[in-house]
Structure formats: C-alpha cells, structure tokens
Image (tube, rainbow, N blue to C red; front, side):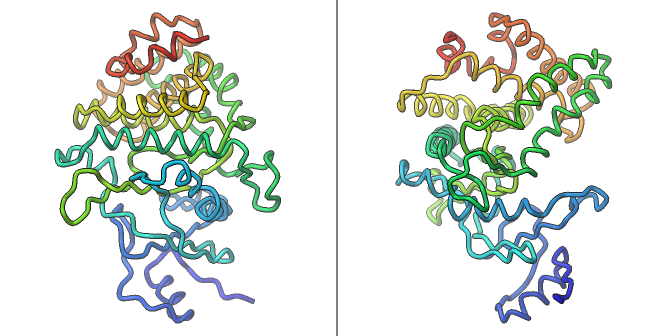
Amino acid sequence: MTAIVDLTTEQGLGAYLSKRLIEYEDIVMLTGDGQKNIYKHAAPYLHSNNDFAFDPTRMDYESHALQTLAPLPVATLPKAKVHAVGWHSYDQEHKLLCIEDGGTRNLKTAYIDESLDIPQIGQDLGNWVASLHLSTVKTPLSLQDPHDLGSNNPVGVSIYRHTYNNLHIALAKYDYDVGLAKLINEEYGSKLATDNECICHGDLWPGNVLVKLDETGESHAELTVVDWEMVRRGTSATDVAQFAAEAFLLNRFHAKRPLLSNFFKAYFKAREGEGIPLGRGWAKRVLIHWAVHIAYWPIRVKWVGEEGTRKLVDLGVSMLKALLADDWDQVRTSELLQDIIPQWEAVLSRP
C-alpha cells in the first residue's frame, strides 16, 4: 500500500522528491511568483477551504491538455509570443504536475508597468486565444478515447457554473429581483453543460497569464498561459467573456490602457480570417457571461469600496436586462463596451 504523502506542504514535497532522487535546492510555497520548476498538486479540497470538496481529477485534465491540446495554436502561430505553460512530468497517483517557470509576474500585477507594451500584449493574446478556439473544434478532451468529442472535464463543467448559481447573492445584496438571477441561470448557465464548440482554457483571465521580459528589457513580452485545471469543451464565448470582464476591471481600477480593445480587434480579425464571422448570437453569450461575472465576482474579490461595488452590480444587471430584451441600442451604450464599441460594431450588427 502506498504511503500517504502530504504534498500541500514544503516538507511533504521535499520528502516526495528525495524518495525519487530528484535534486532540488529549495522549496517555496507559491504566492504568485514563479520558480525554476513548478510543482503543482491537486488536493481533494480547496486550498483556501479544506471543507470544500474539489475533485483532484482536474489535474489529470490539466496534464492531458498541456501535453496534447495546448500546443496546437503553435502550428498556426509559429512566431507567437504566447504559449501554454510547458509540461515536464506528471505523477497521476499523487496528482503532482511539474511545469515550467513562466516568470515572476502575472498580467494583473504587471498591468501598471509602463514599460510593458500593453497594446501588443492585447493583440498577441487575441490572436492566440482565437487560434486555440479555431484549432480545437474537432479535438477531443477525453482521457480514455482519443476520438470521443462528447466527453468533457466534469470538474470544469461543474465549477464554471458557480457564478451563475450564485448570482442571486449579489442581486439580493443590492435589492434587485433575484428572479433575474434564476432566469439567467436557467437559460444561460444551463448551456455550460452542453456547449461543445471547441476547447476552452476555462479560467482565462490576466492573473493566469505570466509575463516575462528578456534580459534586454524588450517590451514585447513573452506570455505564458497557466492554470488549465478547468479546461473543457465549451463555447469560445465564455473564455473571451471572462478575460474581458477581468480586463475591464483592470482598466477601471488600475490603469486605463488599451488591452481589451487590441484583444478584441485581433480576436475578431482572426475569426473572420478563417471565414467564421461572429454575430449577435455569439455576442449575447459573451455579454451575458461578462455581465454575470461583473455582477457577482466583485462581491467576492474586492476591487473597490461598497458604493463602487454597487455600481458594478448595477452595470451587470443593466446589461443582462438589455440582452434579455434584445435591446441592442442599450447594449451599445453600456459602460462595459464604451472603450471598445468600434471593435464590436460589426459583430453587434450581424444577426
């Protein structure tokens, strides 16, 4: 019987590495900074709450994605400055993944660094995300059958609905009709279980994009996309929406920079270049997800004070109501789109 190893501590990981004759100088618990080699362990509970069960098979899907799925955009973007984090090894029994060091900063913390070419980063990410979505339409995610397009990452599918399931908490807190949250969850949250357009990263936001400048300080940064536990087959709209929502918050509260406008300009151009123009159906899924995210997450992750948080919930609710009413004129005037409407106009004009 294999002895139980506590890989959630420095001591436990040290014992694991020593037993396998893997040399190391030091072990440091990550707090967002990169190291030479990263060991990532999936415990059967949430790190911040041991009472919250969290299926460790999510690490099987992350390892699988990094080995077979994430490199696919490289074929269409051979000179891209963006790549999925490199895979080194995986111990499935202990749910311990070894990956490359992608740098010491993520895009969220580095956003205010004026030496970064944020417009270029937005363009690079838009191209890469579009390539990921376009190149994986017929790529299975199954761990057992390499031809099964119907199988999915059950952890990713389940966890991704968390925001929809809990939207009512934000609406109740600010005296909105929780019936709106129920309607959105039933009509749109439910779609997450059956969406099957392409491979989605599943947790795409600036905090999962590591930024590294070369030794010359070149502003054209290398970008490493990390944290693929929630990878799943789904709709491209949710990847785009989550990134957009978090980039919107960065722009609103950290620094006003053209990350999002360049991201969308590149993403739309790449999709249209492949003969796949996007229209209102796709736009509605993006904007629904974006609005739900803006209305819910700021009550969990503090960006601003109470009054500012209320305004974010107001923004989300206003957008949700406009979309349910198919009031595209009101959609166009939303603060969510105020800095990017030129990039969105063609999409909003298509049926």
